[in-house]
Image 1: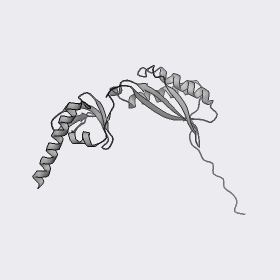
Image 2: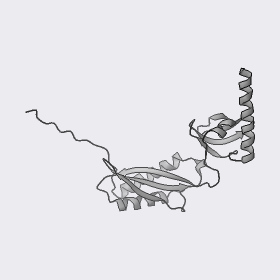
Image 3: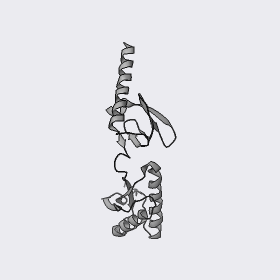
Image 4: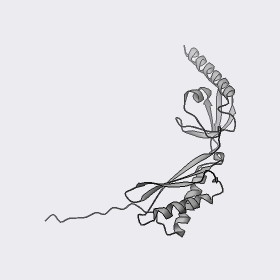
Length: 182
């Protein structure tokens, strides 16, 4: 009985591997993410039963080919290579929101990996408890070089631009009042 289940999985992975090779939805060099198992990396090798994914930490995951057919897979490099990045941030209520959007857009436009078209945009998303909250969106075309690093560069560029323009980033604070029991 156990041999039957083992053969069934083996045949399923073999068949899934052939499907992946035929439809070319995933191929070596692609940057992929499998959200259900939390794996993000590059397709290094495709074999009959499994596909090897290498993460940014240089860990190799051997993922059964059947998982690529039955689970959600995000292929960051399939088709168009443009990737939109979101940065959420908040500023003090004393800030001019028009100035904030201009400064934020200019700050990321100067980054090397940010593309000119489509242009970056910045929108107010809400009036929060301690801040006016924004969503800054910009595009890169080279996700294979990493996303966290360009996000970090963008946050540093925002920090510097806000300091230059006297735009404050708030911190939450609470006031406590003590009343007499009399």
